[in-house]
Image (cartoon, rainbow, N blue to C red; front, side):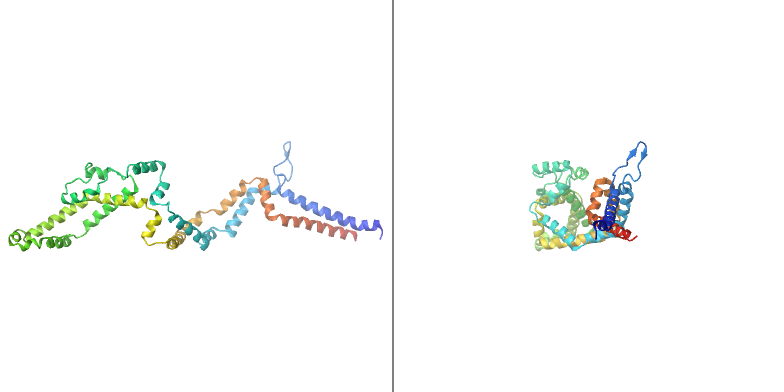
Length: 346
């Protein structure tokens, strides 16, 4: 076969392959370029900007709807959070934090408190944690003997009640003192007081002379006065004493590492991690639906795509479909070659 005959066969095939290759390559490039509209005077050139930059907002909406509606819904996100791996990781990290020797209730409070409260806490700590508005626990014995004793030594009960607690420990003390006063007001103390008083006077009543004065009527009168004095004290100055004791103990516990508190409660790291995991499950079950509704996955995807410039969007698409788009270009070359071969026959 002569060279002209061979060229007559090869040229249409090669030319068709080249046309198919470069046509598809140009078409794919025109998806992304030009990245901005091109004007000649006031006239905008057709097909500028490229198809994808021109319709970026619409494409962003379509991709967002596909992702949030089919690929990764809000329910999928909640189910993923409930997965054992995620739950175990979160519970484990929190348990490690609880058993950190540097973590205490006071340090947690300091992290959550505004700067001004942190400064106040440091000043109070430097001052030894004392607060003049709170009663001194050492006055409890005297106060029980004399209900008119002022446990604070300075401020009246009315002043103390009007003062706002300055720390979480003080608020805890006030709360416990109020609850104790309320419960005692609702509790029948007479039988317990009668038993204690009668047990205390039995030895003295063995003396006939004393028994004349400590008769049943006198002892009952003493019981009534003790009950009345006790209720009056607990509902009044006793609240300050209880608040002081609770505040002092709360301050002491607040400085202990959480690991030590957990150890005192008989809890080890595994039990704490398990409890945190179960709490996490209950939280997801209770608030998962609301969390799912408020997690706008589609909106996030839309905003991300809309905020990309044309170069970033092209890079994103090419990173996902570069091989597939190259296959389309190569297929164009193959089809062009086939068409060129067919043309030889006609």
